[in-house]
Length: 214
Length: 203
Image (cartoon, rainbow over the protein chains, first blue to last red):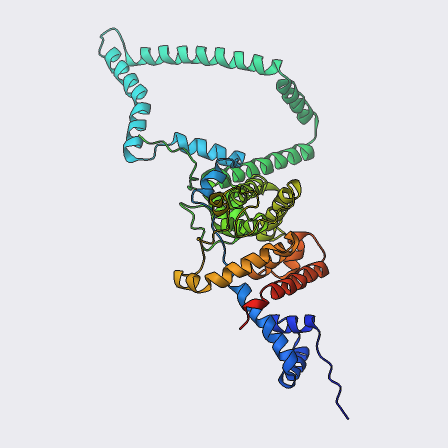
């Protein structure tokens, strides 16, 4: 009696060559291939095709492709990166830069000391008199400025809001004020952490960051 | 949060990490992403439109779309899948807009002279293999490229993603936005066509 042979489908042979069959199916098919020349030949065809497909190369675009793309790309920069970049732009980057900046900031101090020394060299100027004159003038100017600012602030919505806040706080009991203080402390702590984390904990500069040095 | 101290060495970073650097506003991260994917994306689009100049334009469009929409990228997706999805759709949109084209390795059918045909022919000059390997496989490579050129665009994408990029079927299904069974059918049919086309190469 002639034995009936069940040949695997093309899909099964393809999956076998691709290595996509489970262990039992793979073993059964391998065993079949050893006894069936026709299926073995079909499997060879699949192997040849897979071998050819493995030779497919990747092609490269023309040189300068990346530059052409970047010319049309908007580099998204979050606010904290922008702010950090601005602060870093303000800071000198070299020793000479720091020295020059220090000199510029020291100039008014040196000029002030020189002026005081020159005034004290005059016989009609005493140190106490100069101190009283300076503090009087300073107190008058500061009082005028504070009065102007507070008037301006109170004219705004922020001023009204602050005034009402203070009124509410003074009318409230200790428990409410404590809650308010805890909330304000928490908000301050979070703000400080965010500022530190995003602005000051990193020294990295992006490649598109504009640097400035003396 | 992106760790950022000094110049960033992207070589050991995952795609996800590079994206984070890009989202932090670092231009070098954008360039890194282009460097990682320019060849895979260009190769896929080139094989779909079979015209180098158009493939460059479409690849450029793909990267512009990808990089400008990076803040909307869903990290639960593989970045490569997202990029290939955009590349595939960009190329298909282009193919749908223009007349059916059977441009082959011999050059554009619109070419009026031999020189134009030569200029628009598929030129596998830039190659990942060594010059020796390239020389040895050039003839067979040309044959396979011709055969791939006869496939439907969907089949071409599936074959390229499977055999050139090494993506799993599930990933290809996500990229092409079709069911897994459809991808298996595409690839099986494409291979059958290729086998038939390449039968004459057998000894």
